[in-house]
Every structure is written in C-alpha cells, then in structure tokens.
Image (cartoon, rainbow, N blue to C red; front, side, top):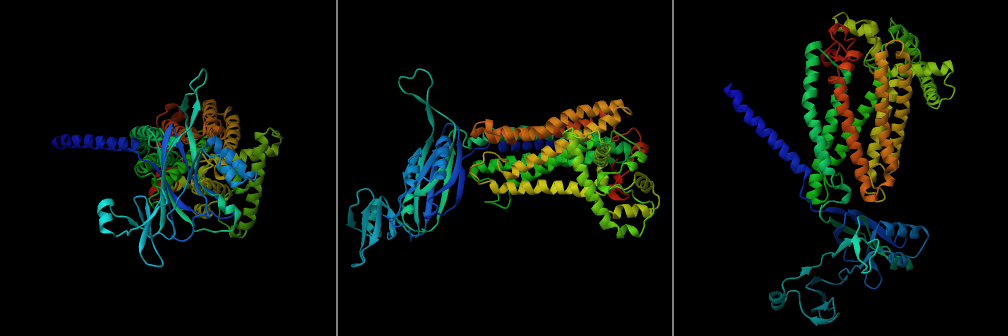
Length: 622
C-alpha cells in the first residue's frame, strides 16, 4: 500500500505535466510568419508574387532582398515592391489577363516601394554612404545615398571609424524594407470627419521591374526573406483560434481513450478475442489523436520561427504527418460507416443466400470446396469476369441512386451483390475464407486444402477496388501538398486534388445510401430492430459523408481570411464527433451490442476469426 501511495503523486504530477505541455502548445507566444525563396523576373515575366498573409486589423511586414554583385545596373531597372489587399489584387490579376502595361498595374497597389540595391561597383556601405575605389588613383571615396555628394574617405579610416563606427563590406547586394499593413474603409452613416475603421484582409506581396518590358534582359535571381506580423495575435488571421480548437479536440480524444480502452479490454477478457470493427476504430482513433498533437506541435514551432515543421524547412514535417494521419482516420471511418450500413455485424442473410448472390469481386464464382488445378489456369478469365461484373455493379448502383430502371431484376441482383460484398469486408481484402473453415481452424482442427486455396486467392477485384480507393485518397492528399505555396488557395482543398477528394467522398455517399437502402429493405422482414438501427445509421452517416463536400463547396461564401478555419476546423470537428460516436456505438451502446456480433454474450456466437495463429486468431471478422 505504501508503494501504491507513493506512485499516486507521481501519476498526478505526470498528468499535470502533460496538461501543461498541451496548454503550451495550444497558446504559443508567436512572432511572425516567414516566407523564403528565390524569385526570377525577366523581360517575359516582369512581376512575381512572393507572399500572402492574412491580417485581422493591422500588421507589419519586413522584406529582405539579396542578389549577386553583378547585374541590376542602376538606371536600367525599376525594381519595386507592391502590396495589394484582396480587392485590388483581383483587379491586378484581371489587368494582367487584359494585357495592360506593368507601370499601369503598379498604380493599383495599395503600397508601392522603390527598391534601391547597393551600387554594383561599391565595395562597402553603411551609415548612409557607399564606398568606391577610384580606378585612376586607387584611392577610396564615398557617395551619400541621400544627397549624392561625394568625398574622399576610406572605409578603413581610423578617425571615421571612431566617429561613425565600422561599415559593412559588400560581398553581395542586399536591401531591407519595412512597412505597416492596414486596410481601412469609411464608417457607414453620418461621417462628416471622414473617419475610417480597420478591416481584416489578405495582403499580397509582389516584386516587379517594369523597365524589363522595354528591352531584352535576364538579371540574376534574387533571394527573398519575407517576415510578416499580424498585430495582436502574431499569427496569420487564417490560423487565429486553430490552436485552441486543436487543444480542446485533443483533450476530448485523450479523455475518451481511457473508457474506450477499458470497454475493449472487458470484451477481450470475456470473449477471448476482439472484433475487427473495434480494432479498426482504435486505429482511426489513434491516428486522429496523433494528427491533433502534430498540428499543435507544428503551430507551436510556427509561432516561434514563422516557418513551422514543414517539408520546406525540416525533415520532421509534423504538418504533413498530421494531414496524412487525419486522411487515414477519415478513410477508416468512412469505410466503417459503409460496411455497417450494408449490414456488417448486424444483418445475416444466411450462408446459402450469400453464396447464391455472390459478392461483386468474386464474379459470381463460389470458392471451391476442393482445390482444382484448373483454378490457376482460369485466373485470367476470372479476373476479366470480375472486372466486367465490377463495371456492371457500378452502373447498377448509379441507376438505383438516380431511380433509373431500378425495378429491373438484373439491376437489383447487381446492387445486392455489391451490398453483400460490403457486408463481408474481410473477404474484400482476402483475409477470411469461408466462415466454417475459419471456425474449424480456430477450434484446432487440421488446416484444410480449401482454406489454403481460399487464402491463396488473396485480394480479388472487390479488395483491389478498396485498395485502389485508399491509394487514390493517399495520392490526392500527397498531390495537394504541391499547392501549399499556391497563393490563390485559401484552404487545404481549393485545388484540383481537393476537389477530387470531394468527388470521391460523394461517390462513397452514393454507395452508402444505395447499400443502406437495400440492406434495410432486406432486414425489415427478418429483423425489424436491426432495420430501425440501420435507418438511423443511414441518416447520421449520410450527414457525415455529405458534410465534407458541403464545407468545401460553400467555403467561397465565407470571407477569404475565414475560409481556412471554416473548412479545416469544420473537418476536425466532424471527424472528432464521428470517431467518438463510433466508439460509443461499438463499446458502450447496449442496443447496438445486442443486435451485432461485435460483443455477443458467449464466445460460441462470436463467428469466424481472421486466422489460426497469433493476433489473427484473436481478431473476429464476421
């Protein structure tokens, strides 16, 4: 007991330390956002956009330009830095498309600053002077940048250094510029004094050289470092409040993990195995929790250095890892909803009926009870038949969704085959063969040749479709990272990969609704309670699947500075609600557990398992 009492303060201290860490991540002491890169302008491209920044009311920006000593000769260039807010930036883009002159477009800028690089022949600079070497005498002289006056003086003159201080040797040409960003509009109503108030806006930073329009030139590239401050919050207005949101969502996930794990442990101790539905749910739960933690970590670092943990700056890309984790979690949740809507763990049509209407991926062929040599030879024809059935199944689902020829018996048969395939997800990925074979293996019987043949078939067409869907989702998530620097995008899905993800989610929604309707119709006569449950699941799951496309497609209605929070924050809330809801359903809902095979009252009713050894023998799949 004494040992236990000593461990309790340590545990409490550990919890307090973890909470303090989360609070520190959620409430960072931010500085600024930093954009770094290289710009190249010439006679063809006289302007280049180098940064975008959301400002709630007032902000500050500092731009540092660095280039080589050669090039950018004075008198032959008109190097300017331009700042546009949202409205004027759109006008500037339209002017480019209309073919206007560069100098006319520069007049549209809210702020325009002429860039003065050090002279290409200068050797030193400092305190408002540039130092040169006279080619005839070899003596040093300096020229005032303000008045243009010159005098003989050396950068190494002891008297001058004692009075003014040392100067900088020029190894490359560099200039620094700072300004304040404020977008105002007049007060509505009576306003005789012409007073104006600050307005939130996105600011765009452009570097231009209009002189290049009039002669052929290819000046050297310039490296830029753009440091942007958002007054008050110290983060871009796009990210205001995101750290607090992620903190509370992470806290909810952490608090829910304990009861969920305890319930799953009770199921395992009582039945000697855990259902695949629970295992997949825990994988999605862990991935989403990790995503929130990584996002908080990224925002915390971003607040300190303005860069964050991104691929551009570090191999420890927490931002990218967080997005991949959330994408994986969303895919698992969507797949689980689809399987549950089609009757996985709740509706049983009987083994005979299931074999008469075989799954979409098997092409109507039943697994042979005796392994035949012809199976290998017919593999190609089976694959072609499965591909044909897959196409016909897709057409049947679309027709049913659009209420076109849905009374056709062949369309009904195809839709039923799709539903039955989704009712047995283990078979889709080639994990389980027939239930009888698996149960006999679990009971300790000799592994039959039919079992080996079933496993050897591996992943068939239905499983290939499932993996292809997962691969397409992962590819689109990766492709979206290429648009991180796309200044025309205001949230993580305002580009073609994001819209493709929306299309995939809509396809899942159609399949979810059609499969759920077929399953409910079949269950109403056999199990009214299961049908009632599936109706509610169809409503809630359909809402969740439709919410993502709705958020992305309606983001344009929100102000530009709020779109990121609207889409990304909304998705985080939806995903958290879905995972916590599924966790309660599978581990705490007595009504669902009474209907399903997730946690039956006795082990004998548990159904088949994934394998005969190791973890697979403890994983129920029916």
